[in-house]
Image (cartoon, rainbow, N blue to C red; front, side, top):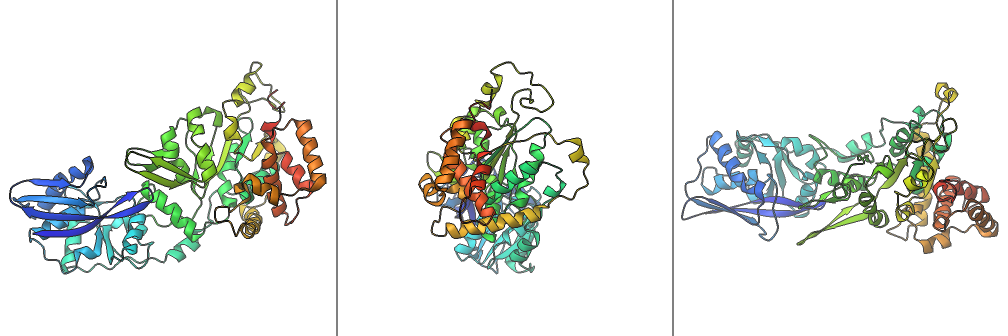
Length: 513
């Protein structure tokens, strides 16, 4: 006898349907084949205990469970439920009134037959719909996530017994239906942190607005307690709201990584990831025997904040260089290569020196001569080259802290940012890979960022007087184009260029003394 059910495996951010075939042959024992990992092989013990505790018999004949296609590695405990149902069907202990082959069935079994949640539900649901399957039987805690996908019957079950009762027709379980668009539009743009809570720091707020408007990367340099982290945490609140497509992309990545949590639904806020400086390069970009997304992919469509940038290991920072350019990361293994999207804004912060008080208006720096330059050199030139705005953050005075003046809200700033992004969307409508000013290649910068003869004279004088490096040239032009977009100007004026020049602190030859 033979029974078939469908499971699924997730590779990268996409899923592949797996056929779970259960057959009874002559002999004794059970064999699980089809490149199972340790967790899949241990399913036999969990399934046997669950069936026994739910008052079903365990077959005494030899049973072969094949996970097809057999040349793809299978991992995890999600195959417990389809295996258990296949065993019951092939032994004749249940007679299903519904066709098992019309459903994707996944779930981890506890020894008493209850179901535990699994990872990667959203991409699996999308693949099930693409293959025109009728439904998805899965643990109730994952049902909200799967219900994001319409035209698919999402059947939430809490136990093995419930799944059997549904398939045999002794219990009706209504498919879970959610209005994805309603959930998305009701929660999009909601943030706990707001720029209205920030006293002073008007120049830094302005820099953040420019960064958000053009998709530029930012590094903030300032003493401890100046507010660098507080400002960075508020950046997502002024970015354009996620589109429904971006929300689905972001949710898929978090689903695969198991970061969504219980009864989670569509992510409607731009992600903000802030890894500790002790993170490894594999944890940052992704990796593992079975590749999993790293922090840069979890920050996709959002912000990656690296606090105390020089404290990160050099190798960790260097692996970000290619993803910052290509907006994706490719993780290669012997038998497969997995792509994870990584289109994020990098916001970094650092002290100006080890003691933190170099260039401080009131406190003296206690670092020995040459220490400041050595500290800055922990960040490589190629990485610094990918950061458009260098912003010096100074401490807030008592009068500013105690001020009762009403500050501009994130919503008001975001309104200007969205208008600037709309200008850029129209500008780059013929370029599928370019969506913001920060993504312009050098050849396009010369074409789009025309500054005229007066602008060239100003930029030449600035580069000579301030000792700006050659790499600052394109960055200044990109930022000035964004400033002009915020002002609603078709041309880059002198004042736009002058403002952009001041955001290149670290390129000045005499900055580190």
